[in-house]
Image 1 (cartoon, rainbow, N blue to C red):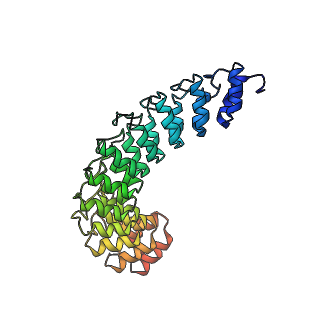
Image 2: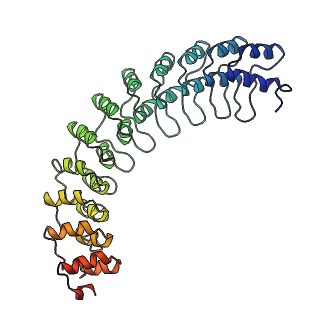
Image 3: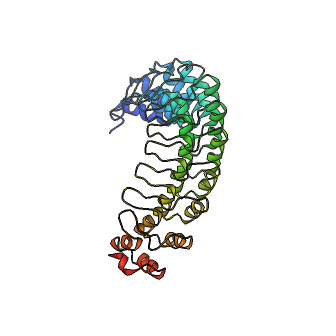
Length: 368
């Protein structure tokens, strides 16, 4: 586009660059201070705020720029300055009457932006004018939720001090503690726990923060949550315990920790699988060894007749099968359907497992 023929476009460009003399000249020659581009609907003030050009922002405001102009996405200059962490621009805009409560089309307020980009200084400035700490975006998340997920511990502490609800749930049922755990924000999680976060809150899938920590193989987080009184034997919607989830993930240290506090070593999920079975199927040798050592029942079967040994054979996990056989599992075992490990391995095309089983005494006749 020829900027000489389009003073409004030239003004937007000059504002973005912080070219104050050019901004004055264009305004004096009739450029519209509240012009907006065709693509985003953003004004010169928004571009100046996004770029952190404080003097340009002040100049545009002095010439009548609409401080609360919203672009095609519902964002204002305050949103843009917050997103980039320009605290001086944020302060200026608020002094000029910017509304800190305006949310964009996705429901995000400037305070949520500050939380998302870990800008505690900006957050402090916004909180001088912002009062609705429980505002939620389209995902049902509050500013505190975003602080937790991003590990913005300083702003998190300030929000809690101001009265933000620590146990709020988003649309997925997750609390700030869930998010801190999922994103491995330990310092933030510790703060939330100190401020009363519920250790047994559940998301829409029935998962607790302990289960989330087990899934992430975060032993330190698991220990922190257990110290706050979390029940290690709760189950989610699929009847999985934290131990089951850790065994499935191959989180050896978490499995080791949970085995010291859990009484549900043989709890089955909705498919009838135990932690031992899932560890065998996934090939997590160290987890299998721990579970065997702690007395996991090797005879439990799923509805399809799969025990721990059968699961390892079907998955072709040679190292696990070797470990199981060395710990007294029977290569000639027959399940409730009359199948043997050799038959299962044969049907699954696991030649190495077939060879191993036969070397350990399995009869070829048992493969038919």
